Length: 442
Ligand SMILES: Cc1cc2nc3c(=O)[nH]c(=O)nc-3n(C[C@H](O)[C@H](O)[C@H](O)COP(=O)(O)OP(=O)(O)OC[C@H]3O[C@@H](n4cnc5c(N)ncnc54)[C@H](O)[C@@H]3O)c2cc1C
Image (tube, rainbow, N blue to C red; front, side, top):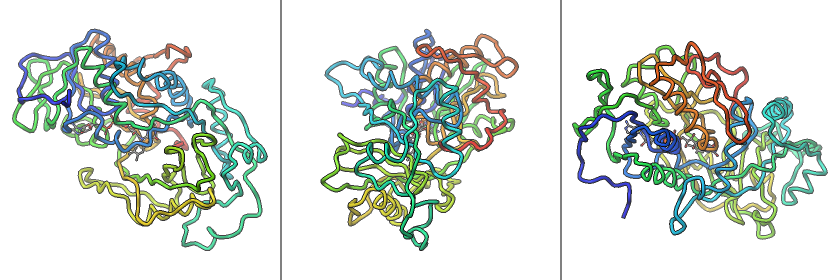
């Protein structure tokens, strides 16, 4: 039996301290943290099961390199939780739990200054990394052809097929990075913990509006029901703009939000390659792909936003076609075959498509809004699965400050990460920030 199914549908009469819209990895982590501070929390999701929004199409990569210090520190802090997810989510021994595979990440030199920038942010964030030269790279990745194919070109372009004359002579290696093989299960583990902490879930119920009702927010639902809460958190993933519009917020945001369609494809490897022995997550800006192991004999491949590939922006997020396109699948498969000789191109596209909720600078927005009691955990930009273990506490600090009458616009919060002691200013993820110059998906 699905423990999250709430039946029959009802409209509880009581007023909650906080209502979280969205039961993805972000809504679930926020619910856990809020409940731990003693607040009465409800989570509402249009889907029937937690984690079935964009979280379910995530590659689940937990990488610690980033172009901003805060994201790097938050990802590094999250590794401990991912490493012992059963402990972090207090999941009973007889229940399935998401598994973290530590495989390390290699970020290849792509001929730009990105390695210098990443090394600088990781140094400032006190995150461990090594610099690897061409010989070291060839030794660490015996299955890879480490020649320099780039800059990224369309596979129809003759430049793509030119025989390289050089090899990649530099990469950054972060040994602690890895991936979570089942991101939806990770969200469900958190949601189950939230339930045990007393959080109520209203699933299969879509939020359709907000109204003011005697000093609290009335949340209107598609089935005619409603719920009241002192505070509301928008954690609706790619639907974040819809929820903001329903609440009448967004007018003072200085960073825009848009939904980008993103595909991931499975590419099978030659039998001589063992990803469990020699695998790693590869950020290959030289070819315009990223990939991570998927089991022993395959990799999960996505694009990394190279200009030659273009961007698919969806105005209507409900029009998403989740099947992989032939074009993107073939492009990723062929590029992977250049890097991993002998990779097999399957007979039909294999993979999924999901939506990124993207901000102008690819950093999330974790903030209050200009509507009293309305908060946002949005714009996760295809990269916030990894930091979910610490986002709950950060958002809880922001919501609690608001409930206590503290204006985080006037005086941003300083949030301390408990393991590393690193401090995060809430202004880094403000809706009214100056977008990070040169910010990108990392
Ligand atoms: C293809 C792909 C690959 C990715 N790879 C990585 C990666 O490797 N590493 C990484 O860190 N991040 C990655 N990401 C990003 C990461 O998955 C997201 O940042 C994260 O999962 C967002 O979680 P969320 O809870 O905010 O959103 P979601 O999981 O989308 O949850 C939002 C929830 O809100 C609900 N909702 C929406 N509207 C309403 C409404 N009106 N009423 C009620 N409920 C509503 C939805 O049903 C949904 O369940 C990837 C994303 C995609 C799409």
